[in-house]
Length: 215
Ligand SMILES: C[S@@+](CC[C@H](N)C(=O)[O-])C[C@H]1O[C@@H](n2cnc3c(N)ncnc32)[C@H](O)[C@@H]1O
Image (tube, rainbow, N blue to C red; front, side):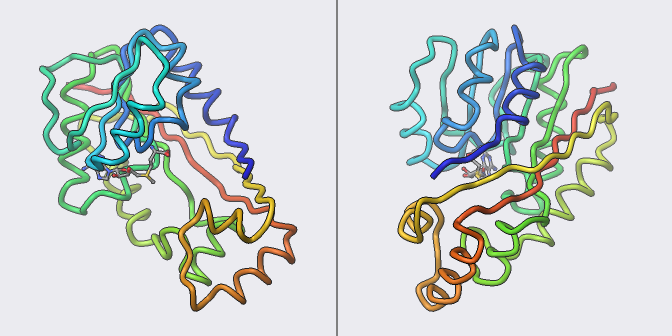
């Protein structure tokens, strides 16, 4: 599998250069390693024990660490970081947790800093495959819409930038797709046809929203 998400990794790396960063929902910690490398310090948190263990095993950066923790209750004092970045994670939180996670992010970020949200948009053939065949996370339109509403209506956040671009995924075969994307066995035949018609190349739009924090 090849994935081209470099537009977003580059944009995030530019913003976090030399900064103390908290990544919310870091997963296995690999996707933004290039951005972590140019930060001053990078702390990733996730509620998934296995993912955090993998992140620490894969980590080769002296300035990065990964911890098991929830965005709903951050252990750090006020003004601990320059940047808090939610990496494809806000829409994965319970609806009651989303506003709390944003309040916590605004609390731990310094007044000159920023809070940013990377989220997928329900646009593109990857998303279409999720919707049609229930693979990966399935239909997340409700969660995505709510996450977007919650970030835009957060009282302490003032938006400074919105950046939308396409990301590309290229798989070697259906087996390669299944190795990287959870699928439902009963839709396999139709899904394989859908993928082969597109030469196993899929796309999806992502959106990065950047905010300043006000008191
Ligand atoms: C789609 S994954 C993204 C993982 C990683 N950022 C990446 O881009 O590959 C969403 C992650 O958000 C995490 N997550 C969900 N709720 C969370 C919470 N309350 N606090 C921290 N992480 C959370 C999940 O465990 C999951 O690893």
